Image 1 (cartoon, rainbow, N blue to C red):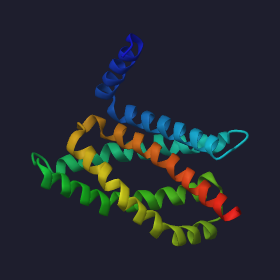
Image 2 (tube, one colour; image 1 turned 120 degrees about the horizontal axis):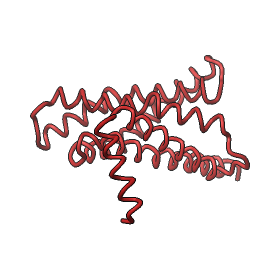
Image 3 (cartoon, rainbow, N blue to C red; image 1 turned 180 degrees about the horizontal axis):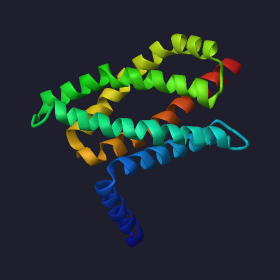
Length: 186
């Protein structure tokens, strides 16, 4: 690792220790923004939709980072002092039964109402139609991420890890949506 990268990482770790909530919020916002920027480019947008980019970054900064910060703190309180595979499995199950459905629902509502600016009726019907398949897909992927997160990541890195994987997941979903549109057009 270069000296510049090592120094940047050292400073990041200091900020994570001194200002954990702020650092996780900024990190989640930046990663969400990078993900949306890549997704827009992959989808063939000629000009970057700056409003969309800023609103996605705002979601990461104001909601995703802080939510993850407090979720992992609460999980450590609930399972204080408990270790091992059974505890990790319980954490993953609890997360998948509570925060996963809520986060998917909340993001779909935020994206429809705020990012796309659609009326309530359209967003509500889109969420009713798409939410079950979105949640079922999430339950196929995110438990693995949750297992890795709870089993191997120290508490201070869990939001960073989750935000990074979420950024990659968003790019994947965008590619999938784009390819299904291309297949329907052909």
